Length: 126
Image (tube, rainbow, N blue to C red):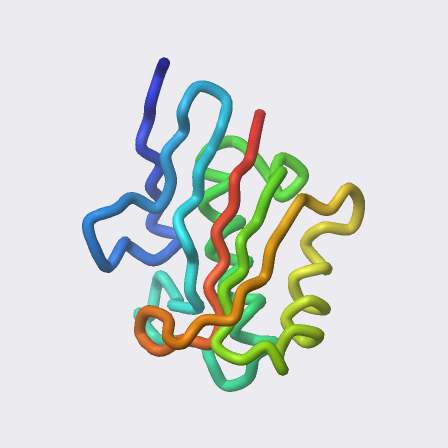
């Protein structure tokens, strides 16, 4: 197996002992992304729509660094603080998967890192 760490300055640096993503052979495992702006260090969380778009922007930057796109994503995991935000998150998230949406689960959790409202991870394949 070949294993390569993927990192980009276009997505937030990890806040713990993990990497932004790991490419194992042709499969990319992207760590959970939150709505932290990589350049300003500011949290983008004025509303759940903006927060979700920032999460997806961060994920997109990591996919791009691995020479992939949202079209390569086969699975996403969405963690939300409040399931009442599901439809709003779903609407923003869906804009990144116009065709052939990946498999996915959405789970409500008690708390997320930095007290964000949404965190999303994914698996992509070349």
